[in-house]
Image (cartoon, rainbow, N blue to C red; front, side):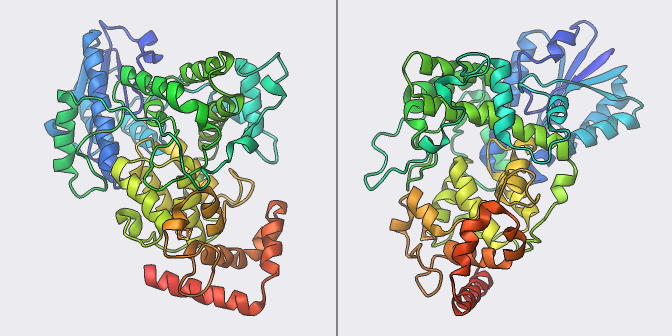
Length: 509
Ligand code: SF4
């Protein structure tokens, strides 16, 4: 065997660079399903089933294209980990070289590289062309900058790829960012028309996977009567078309809004397909931009959506490779609490958390504001150990791969990196949740109150958080307004809030 090409579960790209290098006559492809990828964090059943079904569909396509493939299905072998399975293959077949596309998880790459080294070979890495920039380009951009901000990286890529540009230097509409227009709530009446989501009939591959996951990972979080996510590039294209046709025009206005019983609203639901590399980011960007040029969607909605992909996605991936492995160990705020049990059960009387966690456990999905400003916000102000928060997010979301999940959790949401990712901690009281949703109307607590029986714990913990980290936060000009409000409170008020926070933590730990 001349070369072995490894394909991981999040590398299901039919246009991958490996196919430009591979020789069907002399080279070989290798894919493996292993339990460790579902147990190193306690993976949601939907997440495991999505990966396995999509992998098996990709293997079917590879075989149809006559690529020689070894595919280890989970029920056909006893290897606990990818490195164990690969080591066995290398011992038996001794390929001259091992190649793969750059993985999205430092841990996985390290273990595979060590396995190869033990077999006297290095892994040659190819660019993952499902990203529009490389870690080396990002590093070059970041070098020498005191502070990195997504907005400037995004503008550079907008110019480079001529996305939403009037000319070489001028953004479409004269503004780079329409974020201010994209923060509406649904008001009293709620969402007027929520687009339907797609469901695909289960083929034999998906049916087999559902049986396997329900059997093998029975005690893992989540439900799996059916699988709600695209498992082939064709299904991913259909999911994209649904979003563009039915949800994009309203997406901008309400992208930060939340509503009881509405898990999906106007969100695209394509992040999992993109992160498994079944849907190319430039396809998504180009099609969204066309909707604007054809007058089918407003600029603010299209720009806000494209910024998530061309800006945010590329930025977090660049940061991930710039700061790993150190990022994983950061805990700038010294947070030590255990993650409350209700993150795994949704059994809480706080409506915002019950709704956001409940839909997460059902579908493996919550939208970005539910993740950042409900579950993430609560963990931040409660003071949960950021590594536990990271492991929860990596486990429960179908689109979670470490390159995207870790920066968003440890950086953006938990501020464990002391501001590498975000210019300030995303701390807020229950009043923010009340403004952006109807959750508080259905809650026994009052978001305005920080003490007493009706006190909203998000609000209590918010003031407690500000007081606990008062000195550190004082150095951050973006925290000035919040700290001024804190200073307006009397020492008796602060003492009562802190006592309430202690009682709440004792009750929930
Ligand atoms: Fe959440 Fe507080 Fe609102 Fe209840 S009152 S839903 S706990 S923010």
